[in-house]
Image: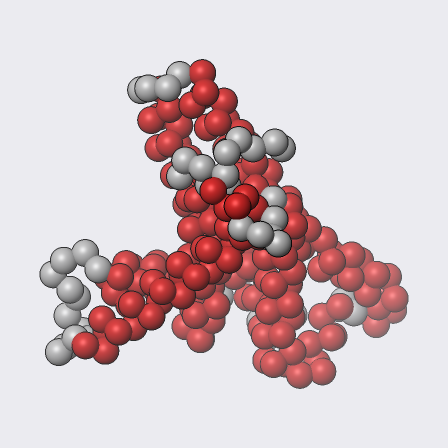
Length: 227
């Protein structure tokens, strides 16, 4: 897709999407350190700040991800909240970049979304191996030893397709959303684009949630003892 003017195109040595992804990463780190400093400075950490702050925003995200993880993974899901929270915030911030004039969302580039899918793939397999050890590999063999050769092939293809599936879903939705917003902004400079900015914000939130939720499902399957 050909984009119009992009501020990050002026960053030397980096593609626009890569430069924007680094910008988002820096913003997420600043947000995290700010929230941590505010929490450490609080006289009573159990009492929320009275005004809007980075700490309040971080606590809302943590509670949301924690509740979602509890419903998907169940007992012990709280130890995975740092990963899922980081994933959710990064994807959401990347998606919302597309609503800023002159900025290109990293997530409407397939290389970026595939990298996120590969990270999710690596992490859930890591958690599975950490939970079960070598016994984790038994889930690839199926319930019957006789069918193990066939099940191993099926499971390997199934697992290998997961990062691609995550990447295609996120990329396709954000590409379409950014394209639609750009078209209507060019055609109608006032009023109508506001509707698509609201819709774009909603789509950004939904897609970040869906990616995180599916990653939770994969982690839940990997660490489950009910294979």
